Amino acid sequence: MKKSLVFITLSLLIYTASAQQNNIQNTINALKYNELDKAKKAIDLAAENESTRNSNKMWAFRGKTYLAIYDSKTFKNLDPDAAIKAVASFTNCLKGDKDNIYKDEVTGLLIASTLRLYNSGIDAFHAGDFNTATANLTAIFDVFPFDKDKTLTRSNISPETLNNDLYSIAMGAKNLPEAKKYLQKLIDVKYKSSKIYIDMSRIYLTEKDTTKALEYIEMGRNLFDDDIKLINAELTLYIQQGKTDVLLDKLNKAIESSPDNELLHYTQGLVYKDKKMLDKAEASYKKVIELKPDHLDANYELGALYFNRAVEWNNKSGALPMSETKKMKEYDDKANAEFKKSIPYFEKVHELNPNELSVIQSLMKVYRITGDDAKFTAMKELLDKLKGPKAKVGMSKDEVLKVMGQPEKISETQTSSGKTELLYYNNLKTSINIDANGKVDYINTNK
Image 1 (cartoon, helix red, strand yellow):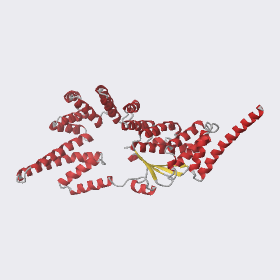
Image 2 (image 1 turned 180 degrees about the horizontal axis):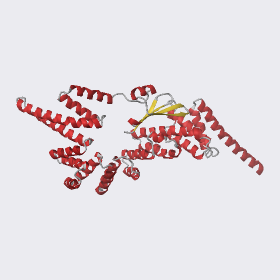
Image 3 (image 1 turned 90 degrees about the vertical axis):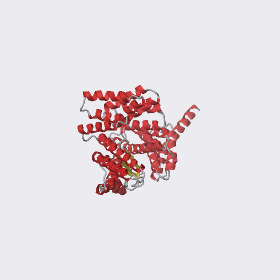
Image 4 (image 1 turned 120 degrees about the horizontal axis):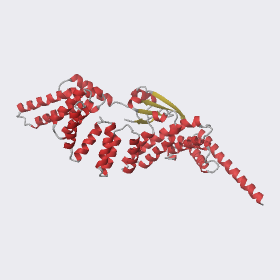
């Protein structure tokens, strides 16, 4: 009797294991005919069963199933978490693949799934689904050990950029403790962004800790000493504390010791601007340009100073009664003189940063007012070009090439749905994914 029971139990175990192996084969067959609902049902059963749940083959085909679901217009609604399940499945397959049986095939599929997961996470962030966004991006950290060719890095996805995205998501969710956690990780590796120091400072300001707020701004200034946003943040902190005179005194003493330091003169100009001492601000900006003619921000500030003076004279002219023609002409002449004074400084900024829209628009206005029709037309044409057509989701590859030109690099990946391509436009910090149907399915831009 005991032998019979043992035999029956053993038979049941063999039958169960065989049934689960059949579920994997059923998945393979269903994938072949794009019957993704049947593939999902079969592979889910195999994933739940003890005899196949740790099978590398099961993980490989589970990944293929969920990647196909994510890519499918017909079956996409089968599982909203298809991308993260595909990434987890391929990752588990490679972790257990000690003999590298699946390495060549699955690695490419893992990277392709990860790119989709990243895109899905960013979409969730923009839709305000912060929990999904966080879960999707966090899952990507497990993928980096398998990205030997650095495909993700070339697509601007790295542990640092993920931490940067995760802090942005936490800020969006108003989860300041989480934001601080990711910001500190970025600060610890000296991530090349001045914004992280500004945002960390702002968080401490919400906690009423102005000492820590200023500490992080100063930390950022040590790394990005000429960063205008950090300079403004430092200035703002002194203004909020009613200590601009303290800052100005520090600057004046520093200038006495280092008279050729253009950064000190520039910051001094900003303080004078805040205190409405515009003649002194003008002198400071001119000193900066004397020391460093290509100083973009000083050229912009001086151009803006003259431009704003011109606008003030225009406003005074417009406020006069029509009978005051002599006074009106006097004010208009002063406005035109100030507009003309702004031109060389705005032109220098345009030379240094040709795609800055605000400067192009300012130049258009002064060229129109001063009657330089040729330069006005050139600026207008440039503005129209910069605001012109760009790549969009749904475009064909040929349409992308027509509006974007040839990419610096094209990376191809073979997926269960066919060949996909990733077009890299490094000069625009943009990568564009072309799906198996030859259409753009996502665009990743990091400005």
